[in-house]
Image (cartoon, rainbow, N blue to C red; front, side, top):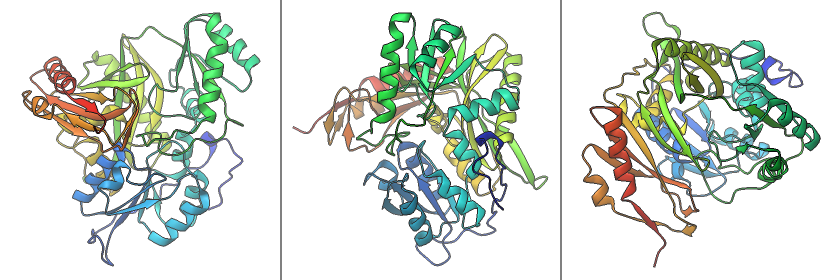
Amino acid sequence: MTVNNSAPLHKRPIMERMVNPEKIGTPHTASATKVMLLGSGYLSRELAMSFQRLGVEVHAVDRVRNAPAQQVAHVAHAVDVTDAKAVTDLIAQVRPDFIVPEVERIAANVLTAVEATEQATVVPNAAAVELSLNREGVRKLAAEELGLPTTSYQFVSEFTEFEVAVGSIGYPCVAKPDIGGPGARDHRMIRSEEEVEEAWRHLTAEASSAPDTVDAAHTAAPADREGHRIVVERVIDFDYEVTLVAVRSIDPATGKLATWFCEPIGCTYQGGEYTEAWQPAHLPAAALDNARSVAARVSNALGGRGVFSVKMFVAGEDVYFSEVLPRPHCTGLVTLCSQRFSQFDLHARAVLGLPIDATVVSPGAAAMILSPGEMDSPQYGGLDQACAVPEATVEFFGKQRARKGRVMGVALASGETTEAAREAAARAAGVITISSVD
């Protein structure tokens, strides 16, 4: 199949080639079923373990050695996932059955070539991966092609355009680069004319600087600022910010693709970082129906199999599409304690074409554990107190370097209600200390 790479991202064809392995081989043998994770942050770490439980040989790729997923994978590869030649050579060497991108910045053109030559199955597909890297493409797909409700927005390339867009949309508004992580760290709230120039400086500097640490969504060095754009969005008065996880896999009753929905996940952000999530987030019945409709339409448009994390704002019964990621999202960490199978288990199952069970077994909550400062080789205290909180546990991500506000772990808790679970998770996270080696 010839792919027209000059076409707009949201107009490119979707390839639905997905392999359904009849048998799973044994890792480190000739029969191994192999998955290659492009990006090895803490979400990849959980996904690696989910694949391993199903007998899959996991290869974790990241430019930084000993990244979280590399610490648990069968094989670790220190390769920059934005380096097209290096990624191409690695794919030829490993010969994976599945390639699962787990970061925002990757050599997407390589995935298109891999898919076109049927070297491996790209999850969910190369076009969806490339589209999801670009907020402009996703927003045009959602608003212009699918007709989904979104907030007012404008994409700009120059400061003069930025000023006009902010003035047109009005205050308050939020600005963010077209390529960025799934959190709010790269967002800039603009409340008055005096903040416009500073917001532009922040966003253009953010887009042209490379992070020096591994993170869930920032394990690869960012691309140059040139050619990238900034989106300005209207801020709406919403009741909830939620993530709805849609899972596309094979329905064993029909043998055809079908979509399952996890219960809505509520979340909060503080200082640009995701800090808390809970499930289920209780939405009015009409809002829940609308949210599922939005998630189904956008995930069906992207195609392929796997988890699709759809972020939305809910105001009354109205739902506004925000973003979609064709993979697990940080807010879905709560599913480790709330669902029979976590979002990572579901992603692994869907990739392999296995049946899906998105049942919530208990209200649950997740509270992120953030670093108080910058340090190498961090060490953790208070684990005994955290584990003494009823129905709570703690997971550390194994990051070798910390900076102020960086996510280093998560406290998970279940409870009779989401409120009880949130309180327990917050207590467990609150007693953890992070310090440098004496």
